[in-house]
Amino acid sequence: MKKPNFIVIMTDDQGYGDLSCMGSRDFVTPHIDDLAASGARFTNWYSGSPVCSPSRACLLTGRYPGNAGVRAILAGHRKASGLTSKTPTIASALKKEGYHTSLVGKWHLGLKEECRPCQNGFDDFYGFMAGCVDYYSHIFYWGMADGHTNPTHDLWENETEIRENGRYLTELITEKAVERIRSCAQQEEPFFLYVAYNAPHYPMHAPEKYMARFSHLPWDRQVMAAMIAAVDDGVGEIVDELKRCGEYENTCIFFQSDNGPSRESRNWLDGTPDPYYGGQTGGFKGHKFSLFEGGIRVPGIFSWPGVIPADQVIAEPCGAMDVFPTLLSWAGGNPTQYETDGLCLQKVLTQGGETPHEDIFWEMDHQTAVRHGKYKLVLNGVLVEGEPPQAPVFLSDLEADPGETKNLAEEYPELTKELTEKALNWRAKLEENWEENFAANYSLTR
Image (tube, rainbow, N blue to C red):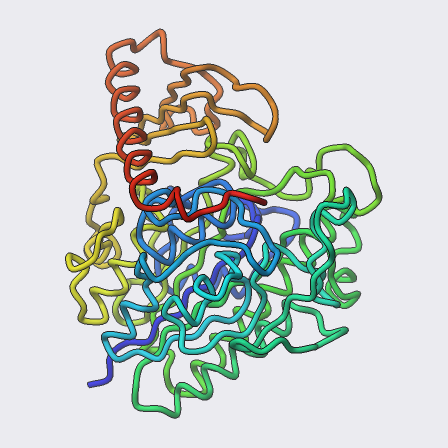
């Protein structure tokens, strides 16, 4: 019997509230909604970080970002360091189980030769390696305005630079993903396909056919809806291709965003310094860069007809680091052979089991956080990058107060002390591992 296929789909800077199945009221995402209805939708799913490179490292390695060797947004020049084969990925683990492994879309885990996708477990790669590119020219412009970074073309097929000038990148990613499914379906070996859309990350670009769907919305929401609609159509095409190839019922699909929505003023594209509010957090506090819920709680969806029961809404706290051990277990591999912080979610997904985590941790610059049951503690938590912390210690009850509006630190001093010690001890061990294994050969340059 053929092993199951796996498709992991990740969006970029998409807020918790920017899918209709997650609560969006001003635009709909029918294909992603169908994916959720066919399986399990998590309401307490977490990314590994509030920014993209560490979040992607967490997803692919099953480790907290610091334990994977990626703790910050990585640079986009062609000598930028990042993830290496020292840290196994789900792609390299599945290759050992007989899988063909493909990446289509955004990498953002290093451009040095040893940090590229095909050196980290992927048999083939089509996409870009920096953090963001123009959707039509596929040029990396970030930092050009202040003279620190020259513009760099960034579109590749394996190790070969290619040109697709004028092609809208979201549609191009979908097209290549469908091609990979079609090709892999003709082979005897199972496949793992990582589809990493860069939408709706800035620059805010969308073809007129998508913008016209949402002409009733103000521009910031119109372009956000249009960019996500292009992704949603892509998800529909991916599912349709699986059905055409007869692989749909033998394929587990997972979907998540890498972190919360961006408030960066560059999203406006008109020079205004005002914060951007085109993305929605679903009512949670904080955005990208923040360890409050708006920065790290994201959509999380699993679909596998006949294996994962349909119409599930799961409130158990779980996260991106759990994808590695979960998929590897379903592939017949042994996750205990790998050092992961994630845990297998098969019972959660198929038997109504509870989360396997007693605690889930995060760190970002000077921020540290821990979720313990219904409680969440954030140390030095900021709402927006560059702003001072809201409070040195912020404790909230996420069941009673999901928006983290009330600080319970003084009301529950013993719990606050316990969780503070947990968070600091975890951070200390992570820092020790970082210094021992990664710091000497790693650059945090953006």
